[in-house]
Length: 197
Ligand code: GTP
Ligand code: MG
Image: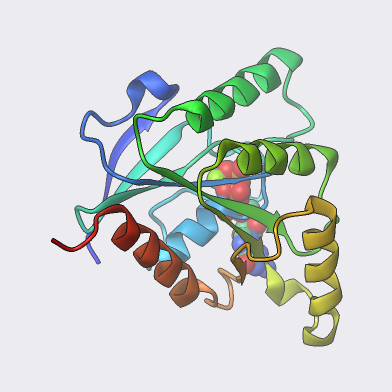
């Protein structure tokens, strides 16, 4: 797998000039987006991670195999951001979803330990309404015992009220699990987007 960070953009205007499918990774601040991206890309330190929320402040575009971008977005829901920053984030994400000039799919991340927040549900609603393909990934499943996991998954799915056929990926960057299923989902999206001649 060839991976290259091509752009770190503060806003949509800074997206790469070359149009390719964008798999956008989105989730609450500190939910494990950058860690999961490193796991998916099999690079331990490509995307910067941190125990402090609010680490990722730019849209980071990783070009994968010259075929698509995996995009690390700033997290939402960090308690310390101002109303202005929050509005800017909402606007950025909603404009990204509204755009029809680029193929976009969304990987929405939820920390397995928490019931989805009001903002998680709001974001999920925007994603559903956008019509773009999307999937849920729960992160940090290593933090919950195997027996307790199904109830956690059910609560997340029910709270977000996503369609029953929504792809759902339990993941752990620490335990290095979930990568293959997500790569298979991405591969199927790419194949559907660029049918064989
Ligand atoms: P922001 O960029 O600040 O929005 O955060 P993020 O969503 O990119 O989260 P990040 O990947 O930086 O991880 C946040 C914290 O969770 C770090 O301390 C990680 O080490 C930890 N973490 C991430 N994934 C896992 C996981 O699968 N298991 C465990 N146990 N910890 C994890
Ligand atoms: Mg991050």
